[in-house]
Image 1 (cartoon, rainbow, N blue to C red):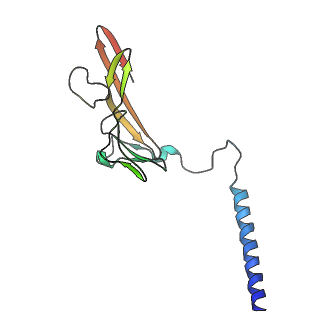
Image 2: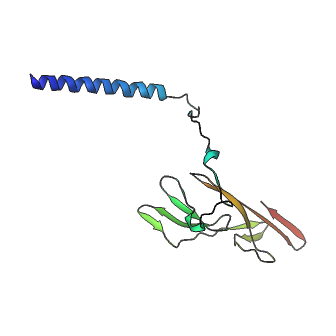
Image 3: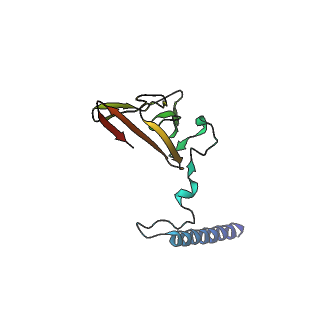
Length: 147
């Protein structure tokens, strides 16, 4: 008799919990192509990297599978990364562009002459970092400009 009571109690709770989960799933469904209802926007989590007091090596961004550190004062460069079980410690990926046949390095240099792509700033989001840079140089009387 005691076994029958336990079985009946277990079946009752299983049925109730199944109904509750089904009800929650039905109320949480949304129409295809419709954004989920949330009081937050992605911009609420944005951080202006120019206003950040964090050291350059403390800025990382993750995708859920890979975490990447941008190179400091570079518009395109990638620093260390971590994608368990792999990691790129002391890793750097420098990117060089070609603009009208002219090589434009992302050099993070602020000297005179052709210093390459100049970093202007960036914005950190939980899933990406958006960085801005500009390049302007007169070469052989021809102005090269990229933003």
